[in-house]
Image 1 (cartoon, chains in turn cyan, blue):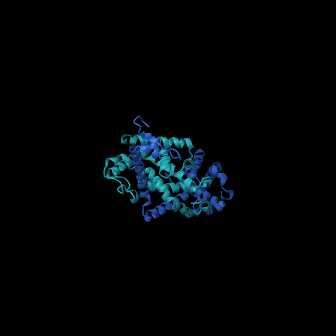
Image 2 (cartoon, one colour; image 1 turned 30 degrees about the vertical axis):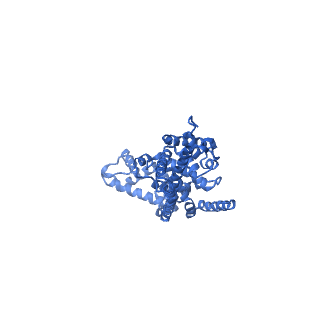
Image 3 (tube, rainbow over the protein chains, first blue to last red; image 1 turned 90 degrees about the vertical axis):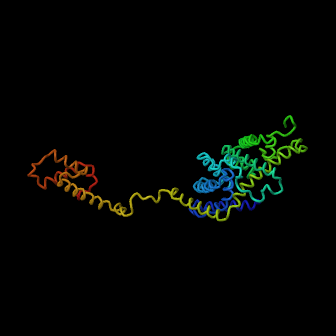
Length: 199
Length: 178
C-alpha cells in the first residue's frame, strides 16, 4: 500500500469511525470485515487453538467497539486494534491455561499440530530425515512460545511471525524499544534452551 | 563461537531470530562450515514451517467461517449497545402511572380518601392488620378512651382527624379533602 492509498484508507476509516460513534452501529461491520483475518491470525499464532482464537478475536472487536469513544486517532485504527488484541490475549491466558498444550502434542507422535499448507509441505524437496527434524524443531518452537509470558509472546510473534519492525511494535504495545529488545532476547533464550540438545 | 569453532546455540538462534531490525552480522565461520550452515538452515526451515502452518490454518478457513464470525461479532457488538446507553431512556414510573404525576392534586386527594376508608374499615374489623398510620389513630383513641357503648360516629371521625393532623402525611394532604 503506497502513501496515497494509506492516506485514503485512514480518511475513510476516520469517516466510518465518526459514523459509528454517532450511533450507526452497523457501520462498525466495516472494521470487522477489514481486520478479522489479521486479528484472528495474530490471536491464533499466540494461542494455537482455533476455537479460542475465534472467540478472542470476536471479543477484540466488541472491546474495540465499546472503547471507540476513547480512540483519539493518534495511531492507525489497526495499531490500536492490535493493542486491544494483545491485552485480550493476555487476559485470556491469565484466565485459563491454553486448551492445547504443546507438551501434550509432543506426546502424540501422530499429531503435528495445524495442517500444513501445500507451500510449506516439508515433503516437497527435502529428505525424510530433514522433514522429521524440522517437525521436531517446529514443535519445540511452538512449545517454547507457550512458555513465554503473554507480553514476550506478543512481541516475539509480531517481530518474527508478522515481520513488524521494532518501531511498529513500539507503537502497538506502548513499550519502549529497550524493553522490546529485552523481550526478544529472553524469548530467543527460551528457544535456545529448547533447542540445546540439537547441536 | 565455542572452542570447537562452531556457532553456539545462541548464535544459531540469533541468525534466525535477530533481536533487531538489522540483520545480524554473519560470523566468518558460518561461511565455511557446512555443519553450522545446516543447523541454521534447519532451524530456519522449522520456523518457516511453523509460521506457514499457523498462517495457513487461518488463511485457509472457508468463507463461511469468516461470514459467521462477522455475524456473531456484530450480534455481540449490538448486544453491547444497551449497556452503553445513557440513562435517557430509563423510566422510574411505568407509562400508565405517569399521568398521575401530571395531576398531583387528584392523586393526593385519592390517596387521602383511600386512607380514610382503609382506616375506618380497619377499626371496624377486629384482629385485622392495621396500617402504620392507623396505629397512630388507635393510639390516640386509647389515650382518650370513650365509653364502649357510647362511641358515636362523630367521636370516631374526630379521633381520626386528630391522628391525621399529628401524622407526617397531614402536611401533604389538601385541606379540602380533610
